[in-house]
Image (cartoon, rainbow, N blue to C red; front, side, top):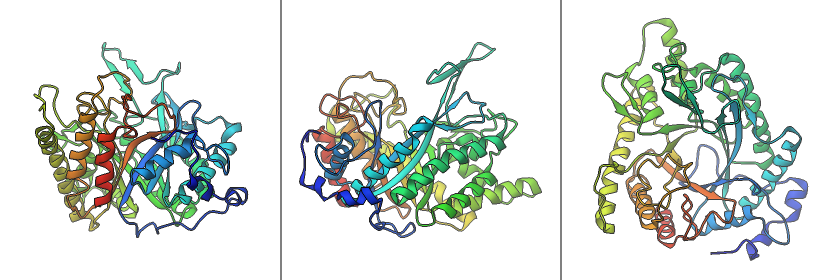
Length: 435
């Protein structure tokens, strides 16, 4: 495991003239002609930000990039963050203070240039978080009936959707400019915005269908700004169930997309027909669809196998189910859209804790008992079922995550990173070589 104090020869390949003049290498692939994506999300935290230098001690972000490359990565996603105060707000703003946003853009451009100098491609992925009025996060609201509701970006209910989309476009504009400056090959126009894309009618009765027409407008707007980038929207694929089709189907936002596109295909009412056609067109015009998958690979009631081969068979039984569910959903959608859409798992991972494959979406917790074998076997089961099963729709996977903070790795770390955890590293390296 490399220390961030150590210089590598590859650091010096990153020419100072690149950054000084902001001239970058030609994109490695065209948006619609990409090979398999093998990547990692890089995560910032307080005091550890995206940046690179041309000489001297490499930044922690550069070291994180080096680690991703060592594991076989060919793609890095930089997650840039925004916030929304309260679920009914109409404003989405970058977390970076206004006076620092130009500096942020140049920092990201420097790091993107370094990533490219290492032979990898770059994705820019704007995401945002919902905070409470006093800065609470996660924001858990106590309702009048005594229950609690957890608000997040997937179930927001802006009081004025038109104004929200205007603000969201302005938020994206900041990072569209960054993407152009960095010559990034990929841009994500939204992630897991369930209530705003296909609607959650049992929670937001006033807007049961979401706003697919607005997303189509937004996609075309971004396409005009970034004609050469791969443009994506990332759908969550979770254990949440949708009962609208007559019985419970798990799958979160993805299942709602399938239901809207396939089960409700070709509606006769003009208003519903317009909404459906807009959703079909939005799906059609995306270069690829991202999947954010945090699904349990076992139940808390299950007896977990204690030896590695049996545990792998146990977990793979569940990952096989999820891959088959996705395959079925994509086939149903293709029958009504006449489009075979490529899928990239854009955010997926498991913490290195005992039974970290159960409810892996509980990422905010820092608790748990160290168990790297459980993490490694979960990674292996997922990769066997998705990456190495020759699905026609599979275009790649981007793990969550490698953090810029150098303390968030190693054999005692309880987080998602495989770095410094030899058993998990071996699974990733071997699988990345095979697809």
